[in-house]
Image (cartoon, rainbow over all chains, first blue to last red; front, top):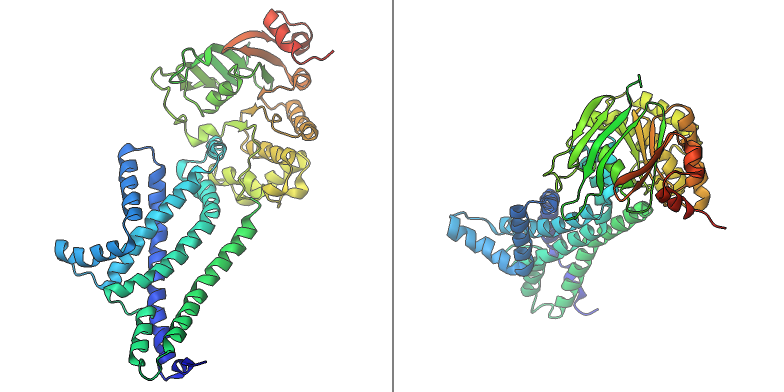
Length: 224
Length: 259
C-alpha cells in the first residue's frame, strides 16, 4: 500500500473532484449541444439536395480525418489569429467537441432515419399526416430508439476525449492529478499510480451509468 | 348509370423514368359506391402500381383520377421522377389504404395507431376517437388487445388493426394491396373474414389479391390486368372465375388449379 497515503492528504480529494467537475462540465455541455446539432445535421444528410450533401460530406470527413488534438489547437490558436476572437481554452474545447459530436451523431441520425422502412412514410401519407407530423410522430421516435446505443457510446467517447483539454491548459481532472503528483513528488514518490488509479475510477463512475441506462432502454425497446 | 361513381379512373398512364413501355397503359374503369372492385393479374402486371397511383404514392403521366366526381389527379408527362402527390391531407384521408407488409407504427399501441390520424389530421376529440377505435376493434375481434404493442400481435392481428386504422377516417374508398400475401396461411382467413364483413356493410373497396376463391366470393366487379392493360373485365365474378371469355384469362386462372 506504499504511497496510498497521498490520497489522505488534506485537499487532495476535493481538488480531484473539482477537476472532475471541469471534465464533466465540458463533456456535459458538449454532449448536450451535440444533440440538436446532430439531429439537424442528420436530417440535412438525408435531404436529396446535392449542394447540402456535398457540404455535409466535407464537414463529416474533415472532422473525422483531423485528429481531435489538431482541431483543438486550430480552434484555440486559430480563432484568435484569424478572427481576433479570443476563445478561452474551455470554450475552444466545447466548440470542437460539439463540432465533432454533432458530425458523428449526425451520421448516426442519418443511418437511423434511412433505416426506417418506406412503408412507415407511406402509411403516414395515406393517413393524411403532413411532413412534420410524419417526422415528429412516426419517424423520429423510431429513429431515436435505433440510434440510442451508438449515441451513448459516442457520449462516453466525448467524456474520455476531454482529457485532451489538458494540452490547452484547462485544469481538468487529469491536470489536477498531475499537479498533485508533482507537488508531492518527494514526499510520496510512488503516489503517481494511486492518483491515476483514482482518476481511472472517476472516469469509470461517470461513464458506467451511461451504459447502464443505455442497456436498460435498449432492453425495454428491444421488441419493436 | 344514375349514381355518381365513388372512384373513376380515365386513360391512366404510368411510366417509370427509364422504362421502355408504361407499367399502366391507358387504363379506364369506375368503382361504384358501395361495391367491391377486385383486380387480379400476374406479378408485374401493374396491379399494385395501380392502387399506389390512386393513393397518391406514385405520380401518373397521363389520364385522370376522380373521387366522387371531382378530379383529384391529372397526369403530367414530365412527372416520372416526381415523388408522392401533393394532394392535401384532407383529401388523402378520403382514400384509405392497407399495405401488404403489416407494419403498424411500432412506437404506438394498438389504440395509439388507430387514433393518431383522427386526432392529428381530422382534429377530432381524443375520447370520441378512442370510443370509435374500440368499436372498430370489437368489429374485428380485437377489443381486448387495444393496449397491446404491435410487436405483441400476430401478423393477422396487425393487419386487422391496420384495417381499423384506415376505417376510422371513414374513407370513401378503401384500397387493399395484397394484404394477405405476406401472412402465414392460418392468419389469412381472419383478415379475409373482416374484409367480407366490410363488403356486406357497404364499404366501397378496391382489392388487389391472389386469393382467387376469396376474389370470387367478394367481387361485384373484377378486372384482369396484364402487361399494364385491362385484359378482361366482368360484372359477374362467378362467370369470370368459372368461364372467362379471353384466352389470357383462362390461362391465368388455370395457374391456380391443381389436378
